[in-house]
Amino acid sequence: MKDSKSTSPVSTPIIKIVRHSLVNDVIFKIVFGSTENAPILRALLNAILGLSGPDRIQEVQISNPYGEKKRIDEKEIVLDIKARDGEDRRYNVEVQLNREPNYVERSLHYLARLFSEQVGKGEPYTTIRRTVGISILDFKLFDDRTDLHSTYRLYDTQHSHELTDVLEIHYLELSKFDQYKLHGDRTPLEKWLHILKFGEIYERGLEPLPQQLASEEGIIMALDAMKRAYADDEVREMIEARLKAQSIEATRREV
Image (tube, rainbow, N blue to C red):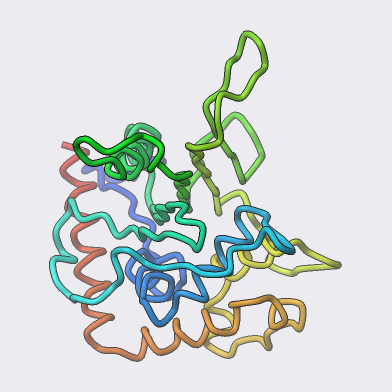
């Protein structure tokens, strides 16, 4: 880990504890990965992908909906969301709270698996649909740039030619987003980034929700779903178990 070490004689891994936030991976899975909350995920995808007008996703179906409250304490579990839209394009959305070695390779692995599993034995490759990976990160993945949203596709570097858009991956680095106050008109993505990072301020009623956020599709629904999730005792226990598992895993990596 690149975080600074403790000054105590025994090195203790620093864990970023996100308890009351949409960026908490358990809460994210509940709010955006429940079947009844599919419209919230649709709004988030449209914002991240910059889709507007007739190009907007109109329908989204979650392929691995949140349901069973188990195995959250297992360190290897990945709380991601798999979905497809009305055009049968595939999406994998994941939140990662702490820096992890080889995260880029891991994210590509999950994207490639979602891509390859579309074709069964003997089926034509024409059945493959556009596959998009989205990683929402609460740490800096690319320290050498200030951009908080990076998009990658297959590209010929010699001839400056894009091979295809059938595979695409996005990284959103929330730690580079510090717009606590939104001044002036903001893009749908900026509004969603603000809610992902500072949503607890409005969910707890510490400040009134600005009109430009309230008018953005899906944001009020997301805050309501967040409030309901945190009101569930079992969900809070799941969060604590998840944090404990992350702490144990971080300690193991320090040894």
